[in-house]
Length: 121
Image (tube, rainbow, N blue to C red; front, side, top):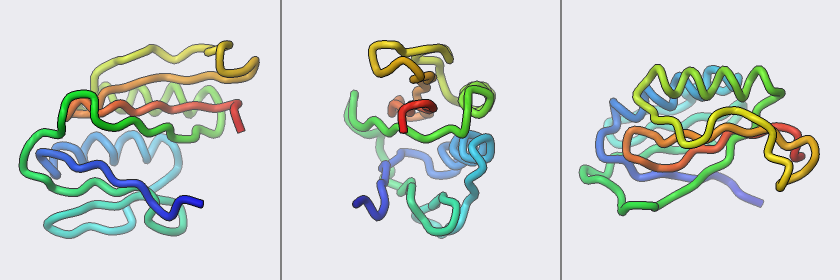
Protein backbone atom coordinates (compact mmCIF):
# COMPACT_ATOMS: atom_id res chain seq x y z
CA UNK A 1 0.00 0.00 0.00
CA UNK A 2 2.77 2.50 0.86
CA UNK A 3 5.59 2.98 -1.63
CA UNK A 4 7.69 5.18 0.64
CA UNK A 5 7.63 7.64 3.54
CA UNK A 6 9.77 10.77 3.85
CA UNK A 7 10.79 13.03 6.71
CA UNK A 8 11.98 16.55 5.92
CA UNK A 9 15.04 17.34 8.05
CA UNK A 10 17.02 20.46 8.87
CA UNK A 11 20.53 18.95 8.52
CA UNK A 12 20.78 16.04 6.10
CA UNK A 13 24.27 14.88 7.15
CA UNK A 14 23.40 14.91 10.86
CA UNK A 15 20.13 13.05 10.30
CA UNK A 16 21.81 10.54 7.97
CA UNK A 17 24.26 9.57 10.73
CA UNK A 18 21.30 8.85 13.04
CA UNK A 19 19.28 6.90 10.44
CA UNK A 20 22.35 5.02 9.15
CA UNK A 21 22.84 3.65 12.69
CA UNK A 22 19.17 2.85 13.35
CA UNK A 23 18.59 1.16 9.99
CA UNK A 24 21.87 -0.77 10.19
CA UNK A 25 20.66 -2.29 13.48
CA UNK A 26 17.45 -3.31 11.69
CA UNK A 27 19.21 -4.86 8.69
CA UNK A 28 18.31 -2.10 6.22
CA UNK A 29 20.84 -0.02 4.30
CA UNK A 30 21.27 3.30 2.56
CA UNK A 31 20.18 2.67 -1.02
CA UNK A 32 20.20 6.20 -2.43
CA UNK A 33 21.96 9.45 -1.68
CA UNK A 34 22.23 12.85 -3.29
CA UNK A 35 22.91 16.38 -2.10
CA UNK A 36 19.25 16.72 -1.14
CA UNK A 37 18.11 13.28 0.00
CA UNK A 38 19.04 9.89 1.47
CA UNK A 39 16.87 6.78 1.22
CA UNK A 40 16.89 3.47 3.09
CA UNK A 41 15.41 0.04 2.59
CA UNK A 42 16.04 -3.64 2.02
CA UNK A 43 15.36 -4.03 -1.69
CA UNK A 44 14.01 -0.61 -2.63
CA UNK A 45 13.95 2.88 -1.18
CA UNK A 46 11.18 2.87 1.44
CA UNK A 47 12.22 5.56 3.93
CA UNK A 48 13.60 8.91 2.80
CA UNK A 49 15.08 11.89 4.58
CA UNK A 50 15.03 15.05 2.53
CA UNK A 51 16.96 18.29 3.16
CA UNK A 52 14.56 21.02 4.15
CA UNK A 53 17.04 23.58 5.49
CA UNK A 54 14.93 24.43 8.51
CA UNK A 55 13.52 22.44 11.40
CA UNK A 56 10.19 20.69 10.93
CA UNK A 57 7.23 21.89 12.95
CA UNK A 58 7.15 20.63 16.55
CA UNK A 59 5.39 17.29 16.82
CA UNK A 60 5.52 16.72 13.06
CA UNK A 61 5.92 13.10 12.09
CA UNK A 62 5.93 9.64 13.61
CA UNK A 63 7.14 6.50 11.91
CA UNK A 64 7.13 2.94 13.23
CA UNK A 65 9.93 0.71 11.99
CA UNK A 66 9.86 -3.09 12.14
CA UNK A 67 12.43 -4.93 14.19
CA UNK A 68 12.96 -8.67 13.71
CA UNK A 69 12.83 -9.29 17.47
CA UNK A 70 13.52 -7.72 20.84
CA UNK A 71 17.29 -7.69 20.28
CA UNK A 72 16.81 -5.67 17.07
CA UNK A 73 14.56 -3.18 18.87
CA UNK A 74 17.08 -2.84 21.70
CA UNK A 75 19.96 -2.47 19.22
CA UNK A 76 18.22 0.16 17.11
CA UNK A 77 17.31 2.17 20.21
CA UNK A 78 20.90 2.07 21.49
CA UNK A 79 22.30 2.94 18.05
CA UNK A 80 19.94 5.90 17.75
CA UNK A 81 20.96 7.23 21.17
CA UNK A 82 24.64 6.88 20.28
CA UNK A 83 24.15 8.85 17.03
CA UNK A 84 22.32 11.99 18.06
CA UNK A 85 18.88 10.70 19.01
CA UNK A 86 17.08 11.19 22.32
CA UNK A 87 15.12 8.66 24.31
CA UNK A 88 11.33 8.98 24.11
CA UNK A 89 10.50 5.59 25.65
CA UNK A 90 12.92 2.84 26.62
CA UNK A 91 12.60 -0.61 25.03
CA UNK A 92 9.95 -2.73 26.66
CA UNK A 93 6.59 -4.47 26.38
CA UNK A 94 3.65 -2.33 25.30
CA UNK A 95 0.68 -4.53 26.29
CA UNK A 96 -1.87 -1.87 25.36
CA UNK A 97 -0.89 -2.54 21.71
CA UNK A 98 -1.01 -6.33 21.98
CA UNK A 99 0.29 -9.11 24.18
CA UNK A 100 3.46 -9.57 22.09
CA UNK A 101 4.10 -5.90 21.24
CA UNK A 102 7.58 -4.73 22.25
CA UNK A 103 8.77 -1.27 21.27
CA UNK A 104 11.19 1.58 21.87
CA UNK A 105 10.80 5.25 21.03
CA UNK A 106 13.39 7.77 19.92
CA UNK A 107 13.41 11.39 18.86
CA UNK A 108 15.65 11.93 15.84
CA UNK A 109 18.01 14.94 15.70
CA UNK A 110 15.09 17.18 14.62
CA UNK A 111 12.77 15.82 17.32
CA UNK A 112 10.76 13.61 14.95
CA UNK A 113 9.40 10.49 16.68
CA UNK A 114 10.77 7.11 15.61
CA UNK A 115 9.25 3.93 17.01
CA UNK A 116 10.94 0.56 16.61
CA UNK A 117 8.61 -2.37 17.28
CA UNK A 118 8.26 -6.12 17.07
CA UNK A 119 5.51 -8.61 17.78
CA UNK A 120 2.71 -6.64 16.16
CA UNK A 121 2.67 -8.06 12.66
